[in-house]
Amino acid sequence: MRITTLCYIERGGRFLMLNRDKKAVDENKGKWIGVGGHLEENESPEECVLREIREETGLTVADVRLRGIITFILPDWGNELTFLYTAKADTFDVSACSEGTLKWIPIEEIGALPLWEGDRVFLPLLQTRQDCFSLKLIYAPGGDLTGYALDGKECEA
Image (cartoon, rainbow, N blue to C red; front, side, top):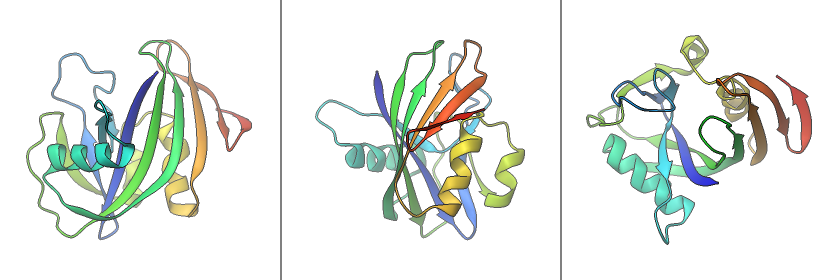
């Protein structure tokens, strides 16, 4: 199981979103996601998320908070355990990103973007919950969300 981080950086009612549009082979191709990546050897999730934010955006962030732990069941790509964070930025200025196109999107408009269906489950939780949640997202081959469990309680997609 891969171990990754994912962060939604907020400033002025907007999240910094990454459109994965640059790599030829990318499981997130064409999707809008937060920033993050894989943990390196001997790295904690907190060290990873801060490194990935610097590498992908050039930002220095504040108020970095662990908001959730997500277990992705992904038959096409391999399962993944993701530490989900939020953070605050003090500027809208970001570096060019080799992973894709970065854009500040008003939070209320994010639902209209091409997202993974599981992101539509957890993104609202970032607005409505202050605690750290546990989420299991179950995908079928081909990428359709078939079910999920929030804090251990199963739900249908």
